Image (cartoon, rainbow, N blue to C red; front, side, top):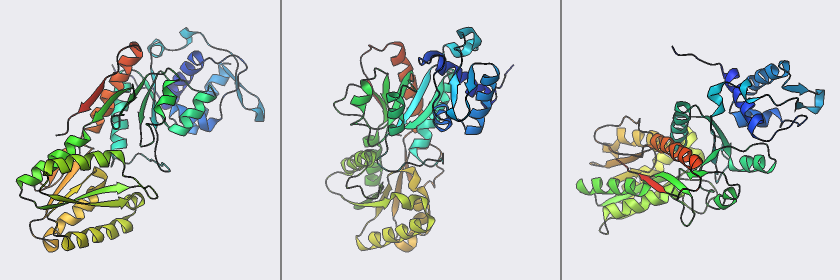
Length: 356
């Protein structure tokens, strides 16, 4: 028989676990509701309902505008047995831009997180998510100390040494960090680009365009796009040239800008004798789809390829699709993190998940 718990009950269990294991004492004041809701990955309505139960059970007490305080630390037996061995994992993201993710299933971040969710659910764990800046504040204020951290983001490399000082197990799930003694499970971005290049060579292409995404104001290419581009060049060989074109990040979420960018690509294809186009991320698929529908009017025998991080794109058979299973990366990243939590002195390992 399968039993289901409400979000309120799960939030209550996660909060009980936190105050029993994170060094809270009677009379300690809790962080603001906004921060608690973020830490537990629940809405403020759900959080308030869970806290109200704990007030009624005299675990917490409210003091008007002064906030909510710990009244007593319940014994371990007051928590369901299944929660006593529960691991709390935090997905920490270091963006190089003003990050605002709403869970749309169109990019690698969504599928990485989905894989982490699946693993923690299978193993009775708790998964939370924070941007790097928020997470560091929580550590400094002693409000939050997870059992392990899964890290990604363009800005992570310079932050990992700081996180390592807290002696919390870490696994990276983005691009392989160079020169850092940290575990990593990453998709093979280089191989993904290389396979696109090999397939285009088989179709006798002579000049290829690589389409990526660039954050406004940045003077560099996002690491994963850079690695995929290098793999593409290797796969094409020295005889073929590659033209690069980058979509502004904001345009990826604006239909009008997306259409404008599509026109720029069409002009560049026609003006530069391009006969193959590689889209470096699945979030660019709407652009690919629009160009593919009227490719014959742009240039006869124009070939398309896409690197699909979602694993769920349904593309025309004539389009080259190279998959990077980011959900698997997230799942295996959490699996490696659990191993590291159980054996913190184990040697660091770095895994690359093959493209296909």
